[in-house]
Image 1: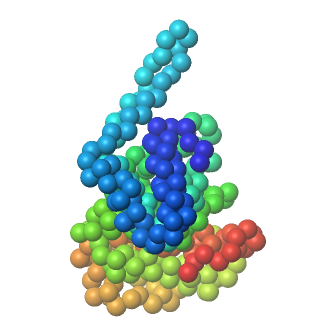
Image 2: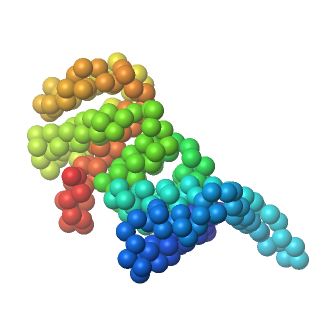
Image 3: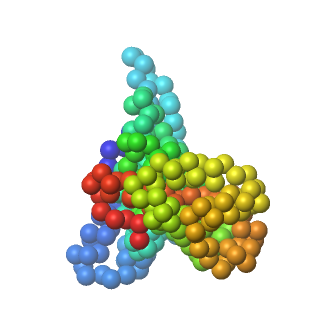
Length: 273
């Protein structure tokens, strides 16, 4: 890890500790990491354990406190790492892909990453902030992001933190709709698809109501012959939070869009599945 901002450092500190636990459990041929952590860190996981992180600014003969973080939910973050990795998420790739090279100032290139990791450490939703970041980065000419892994990360985290918002099946329906839009456009338009579909995705993303979204989707159905799944035909969009649905749909579209564009440049293998 290359970490500089406070919540990046806190995340890296915990992840290094988690990796040490994994190495220890592997050396002892322990299959269930949760049980191993409970036995090894029983008191740490059961009672509040404070981690204090202080960021200081050198002012010559004195120091100025920039950040002071007192973090107590140690058990949560270890369990989160274990659960995400068990689901197939590559956490190091997530950390790397949250880097924002499009920013001109170096201090801003890790700003989003620090904000997102802060929200995760504090158990807040990251869906809409991540959709905004992924859309900007994936549609940039020089952007690179491993969308398949990123979607899995966002989905699994959101389900753990906000299981009452959208079910796994509803999320999959939204993601698959986004994929289908770009796949059909690619089949219809060939090499020109990416430039054209980017404009379509901008319009779909700008919709502010479920009705506007469905009207725009109907236009894309007529244009590309998109097959809409039964849950969406039966009114799924009106049953869930519209902005969450739209965000997942955009992430699914970005998965195929990003992969296709990079494959055309010969830079990566197929990730869309």
